Image (cartoon, rainbow, N blue to C red):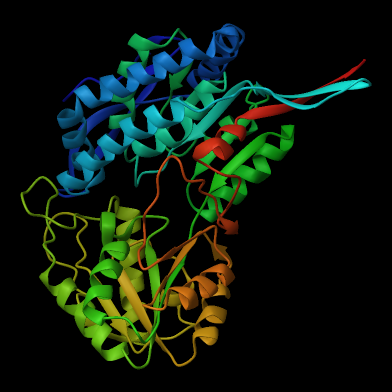
Length: 467
């Protein structure tokens, strides 16, 4: 068993308890992990609070240099991180390697953002300046689907702005985050970065803590509602990146084979465990049969196995609870539609479900109306694009969506009417640190990435001086 430690006040320490981390491809114990206590979480917040003033006064060039040093350190250990990520999360090694590379890239880009003050007005009667100040201690709550990359969505923005942070990883994927903690311990001043694990029992303590100024949370909408309610006790700033039920609207002028490849990839990356993945497809009746057939071919050909094995395209679901949930969606699919590929739960160790295509299904069924967060894709027929748009928008979620058509003007017009924070045209899951990312409706509050994301970690201050 490898040795893992929490990071509190610059020290790598044991947890007050331990917990097992399971490899989802084998259902065997991968490691014994430290489990933090409420006492240790409070100590981490206290350490972050004590470090805040010094870190906030540290020149931004120095803060930037340390974030860049973290990017270099992660990149130097890409192979080690990627292998551990596959073992604890389940995704194929190629996807894990990409996640580590993207982590370094996000750190580097976001570290370079500018926090300069802006002069609004300067005349004979007054001078008005707008400044951005750090908030204080920021709690970063990380989900299990991208346990390394999502740290890089939050930490560099918080740190560059001058905040200190307490990171709480998901209990089923804490190991790579704790490895990040080892790097942070050697790079940042004590207390600037803290990492405490839990067994889903410390989230409420962190979100309600009076010394935490902001919570940046990525996870389900239901948990996001609890975070929002808890943060209300001290009127904390919050950024919530929550669930989605992304719709792809496929018009009748597309090449079904070409579109199928992009749609299948957009639906099954990380075994469908992506907030922005395609969760439902609305296909025009003229190409409906052909698109369903092409998607079925891709699903049948997909290689599903332990992510450490060469050539694997889709790994297991990450944890047993999600596995059981997705099996429930499979049962609903059999009752409400027609499974034309997949639908198989293999009799073997691991949380494996083959990619599944479901046709002859419609709105009002659980698989279409809810977020499955797994490799099961419903395909719904439509006759009129405006009707498909109305059905896509009927969801309480609005994270992402896509429109597929050879008519760029028509696709753009439909995209503008989709009630989603991000809409792609003729692609899906294309994002980057320079592109603001946020959800509409119950898919979240606030923005991540880019300058807009940096502002989420600051307090706007206006200095209004009389002349």
